[in-house]
Length: 219
Image (cartoon, rainbow, N blue to C red; front, side, top):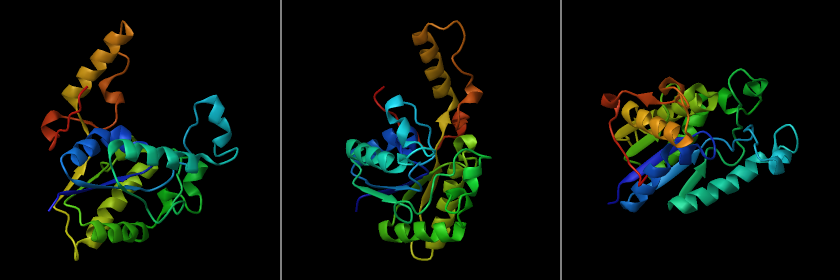
């Protein structure tokens, strides 16, 4: 029987930024990979001027656009099982911490952990994963949807346990030594006199000894 991996992320692109290499490596190793995305990222910042009309304060059409990007990303990574928690649009991107969007009626930050957890538990009972990957309790860098994704992931695992117990739960992280090496390389490539960022500015950096599983890409 093939190993099964379930990942729980807050917004489209979080999975590729945080676990793209992990997902691709798992697929290449023959594992069944399932991604659950909790929102469509409707409140995300729109950077290219040509897409500015998609923003939440204009056409509010960023969610479907990011959903299409997510579909393309999953195709590139070889992930065939991707699901939106509760269905497309059930939970909305809450925006950054402290914004009025945190209090929107269907903002994920305000989701009842038992309700959203039950939605995830149904997926867990269907997929029966051996390993669950999500954010740490701080959500990596403190985004409310990341924190909530952590809470819902653990609650979902708890609710599903009578029918399927997940063997291992892992949090996204970055070893301090590797983070320092990458920062130094980035500083050198930029020709900067000083580091382009401090190690403490990066989310999810932990002491090397805290890292349970290391996944490396080709870079």
